[in-house]
Length: 409
Image (cartoon, rainbow, N blue to C red; front, side, top):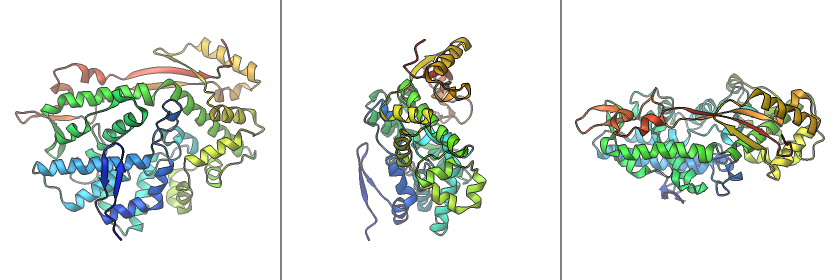
């Protein structure tokens, strides 16, 4: 069988599957599940074109990893074939542990199980299935491999994950201000002292990358309507969980019911392999089919939220740069209780408050390093002659409250 397949990607053109092992991983049911998980959760409620999946993103990130490693090899950095293949597998599988609706439901389906831990767990399971051929990929993913720059390409402030999702999310949302010069950035990569660096002439491309990232967060990922939609889906699933755990009958798929009926930990996954089998049977369709069923449930809160989501009657959102006054929150809470005849302990399902934050570059921690023409390695914030990059490191926090539009105040 010919396993040197080609995918036609709308962002990059043709993407080649470079090895038989990578083809077999892509063909595995664990990876095929990513076709059924949207990359941007509920963002399609605002940007109708945002229908791309984690499958798209994983392939795109693998393509950029391949391009980056080819660039590094062309600059006389020794990269062995097994390291190249392992790096491609590490980035291909970096999101394999995402559940339905990606980040939006991470805390609703589980209490303290995060997608990074599940990704690693699934990689270990795949490693068993492929007789240990993923060991190096796992070490690169974890950052335990001795050549650290491979891990930086998978996870850092300038990794191929970010380069792909900014390019791809910009393309599918039509928010072209978020488009980055990924090709130029990759062509400017090099290695110095076993660390990933960018050549000095790429400073303005890095600056554009960070500005685009900040813009995409405010305009797409943290768009106020997206915040409303994702919080409503979070609350409807939390309500289903609460009712199930109280013994109320709530129709849903068997796998989703299993996870909502119990509070599982990562230790449970490691102890019982059947739990993982249930998890990899979960995708966005389980949640959507649940929401459709819940729209006719006798519980008012569950049915109200489900109907509102299905018909895009999204909550009003108020965003403020200062903490929202307690009197205002109390007033909205009282109006919600009065209007919908809900108990005070249930108001949080219909009045949702929280914070959002955005900083495009973390000045503290793992830096983006620039290799100067004179051979020195310095932080990009120090190398740039413009104040933008340091300013982009400032964390901006905003406060929000969402509630039904029927509630006037």
